[in-house]
Length: 327
Image (cartoon, rainbow, N blue to C red):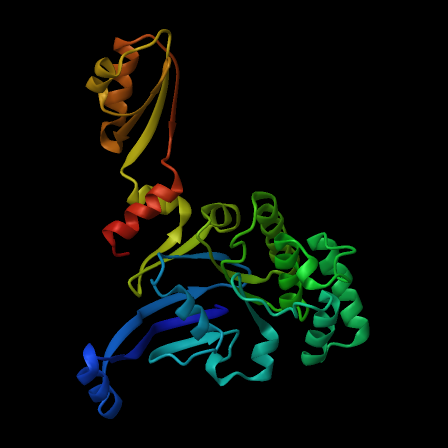
């Protein structure tokens, strides 16, 4: 049975409309008018236990609104959602024990206190015994490489250490469903890698289900085999990363090394030219012309090496959002 079930989920916000000037202000005060803004429109998907799913979309696409409905922070305008068998907005205590929400731009740790004090508060809120707290703390500290850091005031920690401590605080009750909204936001490369490795280990050790939003495509490619893409409040793709490339990227990158330098003017006869550096050139070739183009290059020019690669995933996703393609 799916651990997350979403059917025709929608969220519409009423937004007050005010005309400019003093007259508009007075009218707005006495007789306010509204317009409806659809943040999420008829979104449906299912996620199985233990899946790690990327949730992608440009700013304002509806990602965070969807996460807030899945965690019960806001009511949907219409549709049905079930997480671990619970209706999120009813906010049963058993449901809250099952999930966690981590937002990279928000913090729950108390700034001037050692992180350990905030963790003890969290343990008390969730009714975790001292024995279980010590065991879980030791386990998560080892997984996150935070040994010796939790006795320092939070403000003394580096950004990467602080994000790891936030993850620890969010996972001290061992949730089975993790909703992560930009968990590596602002972190340096090493800290990002550390968070990814921890999330991968947590998923494998506890079979936890993870729904992850991120603008860092390295997070998605490292952790997620499946992605959901939302654009203007609508789900436009639900499938594998490989399927995304196959479906939305009609071109391949062909990198060729020649025995001697070739001029760009000469190479343009073989297709769209991307880059030329010394004896190496890169071509952007449509998939249906790939075999023909490679045959011409090998027959006409002195090729030493040739490689064919998919375009960067960032480019493919940018194309999808620009086109607004429908799944």
